[in-house]
Each structure stands twice: as structure tokens, then as C-alpha cells.
Length: 363
Length: 179
Image (cartoon, rainbow over all chains, first blue to last red; front, top):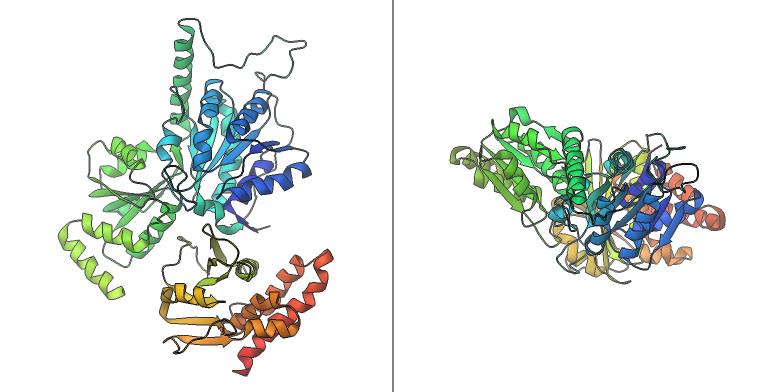
């Protein structure tokens, strides 16, 4: 049955469906619908809900539940996620599975409460100290929020790694019909490494501290090997019209929704515009972007930031075609018209002139 | 069919609920729907605006650059959002709280929603009066779909509010029939 839910509520319900029974959070707009929903639902399913005294406390509680083998989750928005970074680094260093939701808002600092994608670097490049990665999933609809949060718990357990859901104020607050079509998880398999009391078995150790020289390097080599495996197997993306395109848009989340609108509108013009929408921001869908870069005139990356993901796009393209950027910051959301104008600016004159003319006619 | 609706009023006038009822009815009718509240750091009494899109096709951007319909409850909301209405758009305004010297050059319906709601005994249902009027103008779907949503929403202790809301909806529809 379809329900009309916000992205935040969909994330919370999907976590419950995925067997998450430990939620710890601290309120911050624009993700409050998530914590609110959890405060109601967790007691209903016999789970633990704690409104922690701070963001750092909340992520540390996640650490505890994850170490004991539970499916644990926290959520926040940009300034709160910054506070959690120490804990995230410890989770990655202790190889603890958990799910963290970042409903991004404008920054830097306290910023504002409008939609933003300016935490991309923080999310995909580590964020805290040390050589680590969290898997980063970027939903672009309420339904996809539900689906990805559900999958995030499986990914986290599969690789013993924290997974981040990177949304924004619009994805979090937008209401759309959602269906929870995946089976609710019950009786999850036990985790052999978890700290469950060592009676009758060898003790388990969960730690991120390796003071003996050489051990930490060995551990880092193990982490890197795991990250390569994730890169090899877990890339997700959506490709639209990439075979018939002269220009490819690359965008995720809210920006991708607007770019899809542009792809639809462009069918009226003479442009052949396609799109690649990364669903996993880490691992980044390098391969598809490299492939399309070999056959298109140029790529346009659209973000609600001053230009962050565009760097990963350029690394994937390696100079095979020009990579352009259009972005809005500080809570600004690009409009389809702005993106079309940018396309007109970057494609060769003859066709651009045509489109400009048509644009003028439409307006 | 794609209908892009901007709903605005001051916080507390029930625009959130008005939009949600429409969105849920549209969903029940098998339509695609996106409903996006855009609240800033507003306090009670500040302007609250909601973007609702109902369509037979998949909706990509939930943002509205140009609205087919603008439903406004008070003067500041009208001033703030009137320019987002497309040239041949529909304006439904709460004439109890919006006084215009010269009417804008769009199809306009003036609904004395606050007045009607007060006469029914509860000013809080002025939003449902507006909803009734909008339904009667655009006929996006049958009124019973809205009544179903209201019935589901007003259960238990709130059950006695259903007939009041039904009256409000019908009063709003009646205003249009009398035009």
C-alpha cells in the first residue's frame, strides 16, 4: 500500500523494516521528521530510541550498539554531521556497520535550513581523520530513500563498514507516495565478530587502536583491500539517454531531479542531452562517466555547491572531453531554465543559437 | 494532465493540511504527486508556502517555477506569490482577508473562507472551505476522495469534527456553484 511520506519519515520506516532497532539522534532541522518518527515507532517495535545529549553522544551510542551486533542508526543535518566526524572515523577504524543519514542544509557554519549539497567532500572523502571511506548513497526521491536505507543496512553488515545516506533538505521534506515493498527483516544472522559476551568461545575484539609498530599499516592494507572490493562490486547509477547524447549532465539527489526535467524539456530542442545520476557517491561511478566521455562533446555537472562532485567527474574523464559546472550555493536550488541556459553557453555556437531562439519562443 | 499548485497563508491557517488532503486524494486516485513544504525559520504568523504537483506522468522536479493555480489565504501571501502564477493561471483567494483594489489579469475566484468558516462555528475550517471551492473549480477528482481522507484523519476523539469539515467542504463548493 502506498503512503504519502516525507523522505525523512520514509528513511525512518525503511530502517525499521530493515531490522534497525537502535536509533540515537539529536534534533536539527531539516531532519526532525526522522527523529520524530523514530521516537514513535521504535517503542512500537521494541527497539531503543534515545534523544542523546549531543551529536557526539549519539554517534558513540551507535558505536556501542554496532559493536554488540545490533543494527544501529543515527541521523542529523550538516552542522550535526560535522560534530559526529570523530565518531565516524572510530566506526570506520573499528569496522563497525551502521547507517548515518545526513539531510544536508546550507553551510558553512550554522548556515541555513534550506537544501544544499555542500557536504559532498566531507561525505565521500572521509570527513574524519585517517584513511577511510564510508559507503555513500544518494537518494533522489522519497521512494528511493526508502529503498536505499533498507539496502544500506545490508551493505553495512556485508562489509562491516559505516554507510552514509546523503540527502538534502528537499529530499528529506518532500512528500511523495512510498511503498515498502521489501520484506521486513526478522531474525537477522548473528555476527560472529560482535561483542556478545565471550562465554564458551574465544573473545572478540573491536578496536581502532594499533599501537604496535607495523600492525596499523597491516590493518590499513586490509581496509584498502576492502574498499577496492566495494569499488568493484557496489557502484550504482542511473543512466538516461547516454547513447544518443551530445551533452551529458551529471547530478545526484535534488539536482538530479531538476536535470531530469531538463532532459525531458531538451527533447523539444535540437540538443541531445543525456544524464548520469550517481546513486553511490562512494564508490563513485567512474567507469560509466569515463565511457560516456569518449563519445560526447562535453559534460555538465550540476550541484547545489560551489563545485565538489565535479572534481570526481574530472578525475573519471581524465581530459577526454571538457567538463563544465553549474552550481548554486547557500540554499539555492538550480532551476531547469538556468541549467538549459548553461547548456546553451557551453555547446558549439550553431546549435546553441538555435536553442536560444527556441527558448525565447517558449518564454 | 499536470497541475502545479502553490498554496500559501500564514502559519496556522491550515495550508499544510489543505495540500496534504489534496495530495493524498490524488495518490488514492492513482496520480503521481509531489508535495513540498517550504518552511524557512518562520514563526507562527509568518508566511508558509507549499508546492503541490499532481500529474498523470512521472514528476521530475518538485519545484514550481510557474504555477497553474495559486491558493492564498492572506494579503502578504498574495503579494509574495502572485507573480509565480502563469499568465492564464487560476487564482483562488480568501476574500475575507485579501482586499484588492484592482483585480489581477488572471481567472480569479474570491472565496470569503474565513467568514464562511466562522458562520459554521469554527474559523479553523477556512482551509477546507477553500479546498471545496478549488475542487468545484478544477474538478481534479471526486469530492468523496477528500471526504475519505478526512474520515481517515478524524478518528476517535476527533470524530465529531468530521461533519463540520464536510459542511465546510460543501460550503466551499456551493460558493462556486452560485457564481
